[in-house]
Length: 216
Image 1 (cartoon, rainbow, N blue to C red):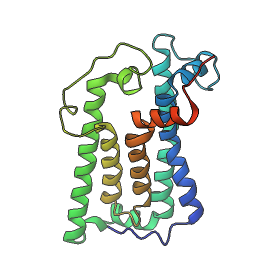
Image 2: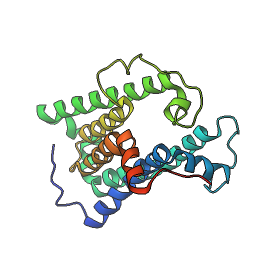
Image 3: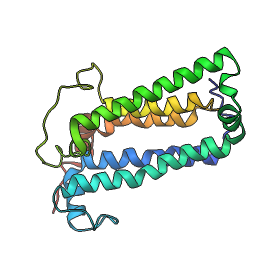
């Protein structure tokens, strides 16, 4: 696995870092400024939400925005792998590069295992919580069951986020990517989410800086 970033264009690195952060900042906004988000939805200040059912309006709005915002994450990864690293990925995927040596075969197997486990975690998180629970139904005030089944009976916090990270690292390992800058950027943003942006710590810090959120 090569961590060398020398061949990554600096403008792309800067744009990628902030583009990947848009999703995390959106979720942070909903978590920390929940009432403000609800007001913005009620007043139709956020585009692209006009067709959403009034039943579960807030969590469905968050679900829709979450789908839109994935464009940034997918776009960055696709550009990184299929444009900047095109020749390397092509050789590894379509010319058997990842099975050319025992080391690369082991990397391929490990990458696929991470991808499988990551998707398994995501699947069971959605199965346990449902879309309403995943998209902040509890924070928005909808009745949501508290669960203790798999994967919430594991001794790890935020299994969905770890599932996403395992999936991204798994893909990059499996295709033999030349650089792991994008997975590391994702790791940075998701850790920020887990520890601050979507954490009570973040709420306390926001309140200390700005005072209690007021909704007119």
